[in-house]
Image (cartoon, rainbow, N blue to C red):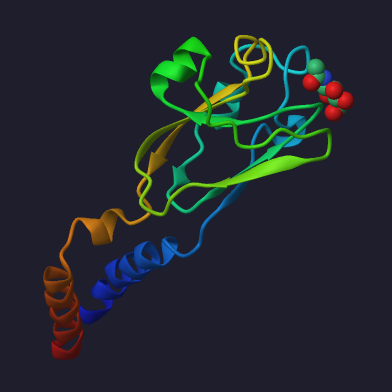
Length: 158
Ligand SMILES: *[C@@H]1O[C@H](CO)[C@@H](O)[C@H](O)[C@H]1NC(C)=O
């Protein structure tokens, strides 16, 4: 029964390869949406993001509650709540902005509101994005095909 012991790893491998095409969709802040004090307090979006495993290719929907906007910024701009331009969309209640993380995203992404002192009041989001292709990216296509043929021949032998 050595052959059947390979089915598990094979299924996991295939699930990893498929994960890249199964992007997740998140509404930032859940029902609270993308909003400013007093609707939120400082740290609200950190709490929302905590424990979420965001990956490249996932989408974030910023559901505007009240008149809001959005900017994708650097860490320094996030820390200082200041950005030169980069404002993606200003909108009213019921509008919003969808941001798709690049497929090859890997690392921190920062979002703020640039309206008045919204950002200082806590309307800022920092997320840690994992590459959606951790398995593939660490292997060249040559070594991948070697791996696949090794697995296949192991399955055929047993
Ligand atoms: C708070 O949320 C409500 C409900 O969506 C919205 O109408 C209001 O404008 C928001 N307030 C602020 C300051 O964003």
